[in-house]
Image (cartoon, rainbow over the protein chains, first blue to last red):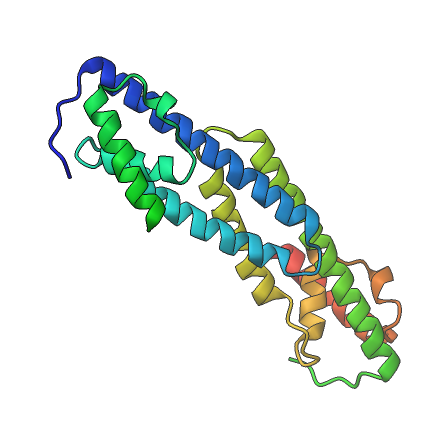
Length: 110
Length: 110
């Protein structure tokens, strides 16, 4: 996507932010599954939970792509979806953070 | 499978036993999913739960087949797997219960 240089400390910060977002999204998926199983007991809950998890597992696979060549776009999407804040990205240089913020606004509109 | 006559009261008893077994097995699946999500938090739990539910949903679809032509075999399997007891089938005539018990022993050995 964009050929940027990542310093060692930025790489470390990027990994931490990526893992934090993934961990938050996984926690939300777990809570949703628990709620599905708790609130539905009409015989549809096994299939409904299966369908939900198939969709979410596919989405996670597609979304959480830690390649530096696409990472600005990945972080932008995670911000747009609320899994990441600019504070999580404080370890990145200002140019990258600005790029992520801008891309994130585009994601929010689409 | 076997061409047996089912009286109205036997049909009612068969439905109740079928639903009881399904309800027990679903409850066990739910508890297993809750345990999976509670005990695993290493990033593999979403896929592990998805895989488990895909397998179980497929198994339920295949196993819970309420057609009278196959119902003796269905009940036999449910008994062999512990989802059903002979007491659940008290509303069936003795010949059917005996058939189910015999088939169930075959299931247990295989």
